[in-house]
Image (cartoon, rainbow over all chains, first blue to last red; front, side):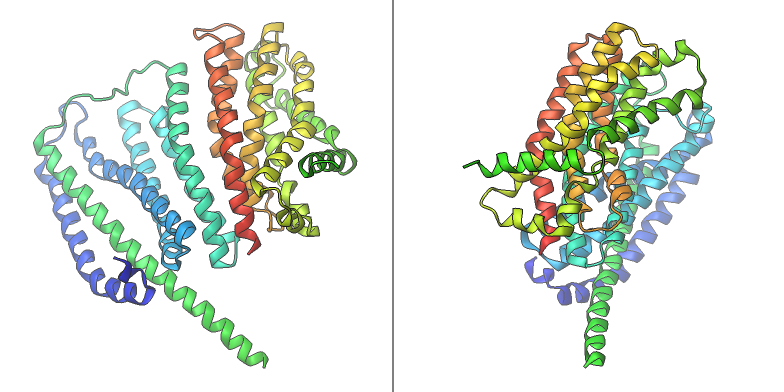
Amino acid sequence: MWKYANPANFLRLANALIPWTGALAVALLAFGLWGAFFSSPADYQQGETVRIMYIHVPAAWLSMFCYGVMCLSALGTLVWRHPLADAAQKAAAPLGAAFTFICLVTGSLWGKPMWGTWWVWDARLTSVLVLFIIYLGLIALWQTIEEPPKAARAAAILTLVGAVNLPIIKFSVDWWSTLHQPASVFRLGGPTIHPSMLWPLLVMALGFTILFFTLHMMSTRNEILRRRLRRLSILAAQEDAR
Amino acid sequence: MKSPLAALLLRELRLARRIGGGAAIGVVFFLILVTIVPFAIGPDLNLLSRIGPAILWIAALLATLLGQDRLFQSDHEDGSLDLLRLSDAPLELIVAIKCIAHWIATCLPLVVAAPFFGLMLAMDATALAGTTATLLVGTPALTFLGAIGAALTASMRRGGLLSAILILPMAIPVLIFGVSAASAASGGTIPFATPLLVLAGLSLAAMALAPFAAAAALRGMGD
């Protein structure tokens, strides 16, 4: 594994893998969407709107998974000061924000017909919203600090502070929500999901995950190239100055 | 011979008193936040007394966090942060001392002023006492969390807004337990002690952990 931590080796590996994982992601998503739209039945209560679930739930899952990837990269940045970890960290933040945004928007679209409102201050929705804001803050931090190694260290610290804080936020928002409104629409557990709906969901989740890895590799590759470009242009400017 | 940390505490307090209006400016900012709320929602005293704890808490949150972006910035600009880093005292303790000084200089006056501003919002005595107690217990968490944001943005010219964006989501638990304890004080289904103890726990955890994050951020800026 350490062999591929070298940016040049990583570029070679990523270039080899990206077409395959990209094709796999497209195939899985196409199969999953077919399953979601045509093969699986409509819900007896929610009707056709239940199909939003096949986008919403995988996006929600990835919004958290992506934060995990960022935490691991942040450890790589702080402990080993590895440039590849910096690049992986930076690449994951916009992806995580995008998946969280998809989760929020589809949830809102699903909430309108089901609960009759675009937004409720429910515990889960609120903590996902906070997660989204934390992603945006991280992106802003990345864009504000110019030197990549400094930006990486600052973002890594904030990511880990967020990792400590996210369970606390989740817990406190749960407490707050149960304090304000008794659970009515939102039931944990609920009816167990039928296999005919479960398999498209799992296929979609797998497809989203592979899509994330593909995009993450592409974005990390871009970041490495961007850093090289930056270094080269600094060198060129120094040459010119002489 | 004074210990270096005591000397630092005195220096910070003196600086806070002499530069930029000191405690007064924070209290005035707090006052103006409390003042504009009735203009926004109307002068209905029943409504104001009901949401009074929430108003005081949001005002305290903003007054604390917005005033904090200069915590390390000025020291970074004039080079005294480098001197502090060279001293024998660990940077984590230096950060903690600076936070304590900032809390004494800006948050403690807010806590003292809160009951008087609460009177303007027609809050009754128990609600006033409860809100003041929660502010006293909860504001250290805000100061120490804010120190992380201040440290991350220390070398930026306009770090204030970014620091607030980074730290406000992290401060949500403090706000939740602060307001719910303050509301519980004036009656409600939950006992006052439960959220207050959680709030105290959040403050203690922030005091114990945040200096490490802030010191790491300052080190990352330096080299």
